[in-house]
Length: 412
Image (tube, rainbow, N blue to C red):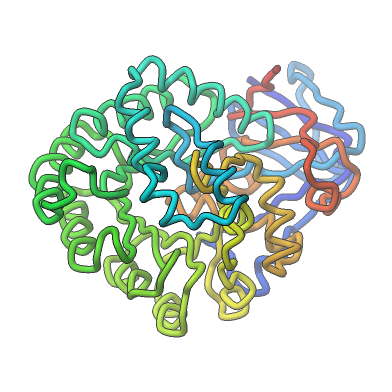
């Protein structure tokens, strides 16, 4: 489709001029073009600039932006969007003061979702996930990472990864697949934890690699879950098979997970609520993205990751939702911007960069998406506002007016 978007009030490009990420003061530089036009040819951005600064072929379709704001599509680089069941009962338990561990001991937590997900068919899982992806897209997210991890058996994890890959082929949203078989220990291996790790490495990872079911491999490296030695074993095997490490790190305790992730060249380490000086020092000397999840801290009333400190230390920061049934039941990246600004002390500009270009970098995709630049994929979202700062300011509502995904204008 050939398309021109004209009469744009603010074209927020987040341009990086070839850089993979933005860090430090660069995260405030959105490179806004006012009173702008944008030309899209066969899904690729081919021209942009001030209104009437370039000619438009007559055969192009036209969108009149009516002075509205245009941003790159959000890149949500950490979600658990394929699952069955719901856990509103746990939400009520937390409201009454129960801890995460107490809820897990009462049969809740990851294992609760595991039981529902194991019982669901692939068709049922895809139907549920399709609705969620539709809603994410309507809220301005055009690329989503989805993790497995609620199956925790070879059969159930394969079912999840197959569902994720079919969604990747069928849905307008770009989907990146991550294997998170090391999300928790299944109950049948509660007394045989190393045996489960060996099964992951000796059977599941080779099968996934052979079928190309996942680009990334993630581990919940945490006290009471997968220790440093087990995590390293999994990541080393994943790398040997050509998959890219990611890591749930320093969420509940600082146990060296960030340092291990950096050592293993993880594309990102995510959560970081308990990040310490050693972890910060490791990140400063690496190419690993620090991905923070403000919605999770908000929902659980937990401490927030030190995103302000990370940016001030020149460490590239990404923002993602962590959408999941237990600890973050919100898929709105617009809401994540607000929480990042109000609770983590980011500027609106830093939050937008973290949710677009740096989120794309956390998936290895920032050369293709995450900013509005010539040669990049045309994933752009038009917002019914006059100033980009209004989006995090007026929170709790969806400001999206139109979505252009890969050059195609979507209708909802």
